[in-house]
Length: 103
Image 1 (tube, rainbow, N blue to C red):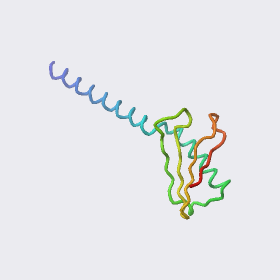
Image 2: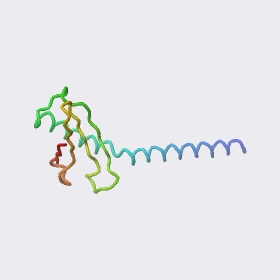
Image 3: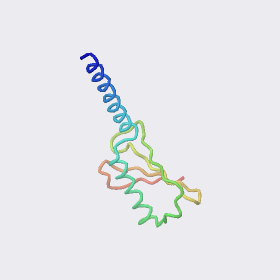
Image 4: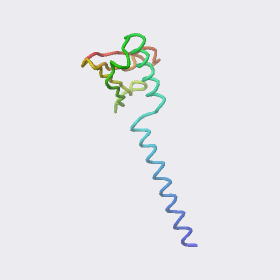
């Protein structure tokens, strides 16, 4: 009886550890849907509005800011092969437009 009790406590501790780990990952990386929504808007802007091809893009990074108000948690930086960097974020809370900064 004591062995079963000890195994159950050990399994519970592992289960709680896994739950805490995944909640921490979700907090650290943010909600996938939020990141993907901004990323889709950025890719649309790059291809349709800026007319930048896939070959011209060197790197795309998504950053989660530690401070801010929803939906302004995320910032996307696009590095181009010509050395320019474009930084994207939402312009308003309705997520209807983007703010682009060129470096």
